[in-house]
Image (cartoon, rainbow over all chains, first blue to last red; front, side, top):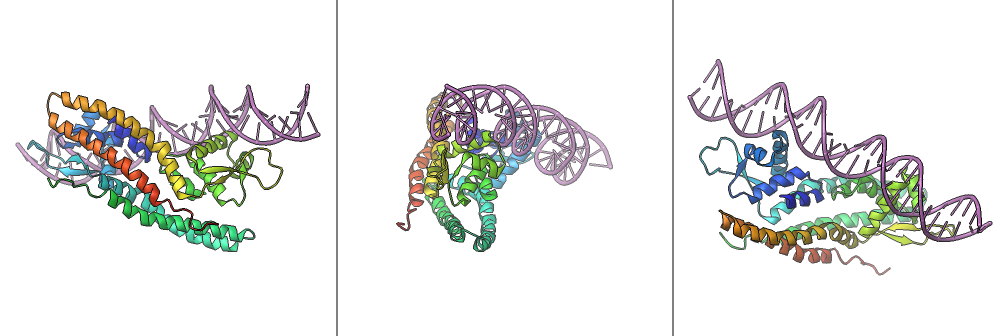
Length: 154
Length: 154
DNA sequence: TCCATTGTTCATTTTTACTTGAACTGCACC
DNA sequence: GGTGCAGTTCAAGTAAAAATGAACAATGGA
């Protein structure tokens, strides 16, 4: 759990969320909110928000609790590396990339009107454009590389 | 600058560091610490630490200031996407990966000795091992994809 | 040699982000 | 319809991270 907590922090995701994922990862059966609160000794609020984030990232899945007593929803950890990575990419990077595209347009105009160094500014905006393009081409490649997650049919 | 500030925050890098990089990116000539402090209106301390981090990431390079008056060191932004990405990977992810490898060993032992669910735990540790492997194989591929930064010889 | 400038370090303050806990909703079962 | 559990939301508190600024090297000119 500590391991996951550290990893996710690299991506600006709160530690507690990493802990929750780690707990689910290490649990042989799906856990519900209440179980998580008890095992991690965190507040209901934290756990609820953490689960929301993990859901939005596609890092956890609903699952049938094994004991019939299941009142609420139970979750288990998503194990596909591809899914995890694409989830983060989509939720975090993509918004920035599209917002960046708009800004880029405005920048281009500004650069063209610059009182001096116009050539330089145009050059830099071109470079930014280039980065953006590479990002959009490399991303799908990356997820494809991580893709073949189903080694065994199972 | 705001753009870079947002991007770097995704990787857990302080906003001000992104600003500094953005400033250097947008500057047609290298800037020294003093200039950065004045232009961004941040403290000397922040700027100094920010530059240290950027240096350690290989995101900036020393450069000759154009006006001969240059007393201290001046920096310019590293433009190679490959260099930027590998810098972040090396400084941030790599340490975790190697630390993770050690933990993994211990985990394996623990899993083997688990009073119950041994098979499950062994399975999960195997999975972690698998992730680590894929990480180490994909990383160089990724940087290679970003590699051909010298489109034109210049 | 001494002063001015550049740059670093670190204790303190400020800001940001996370967690908490209480109030609230909805549902299931009685 | 009422009671209790599962889950959400949000204002307030708390903890963690970053910025500040002052004290301290180091270096280069005069």
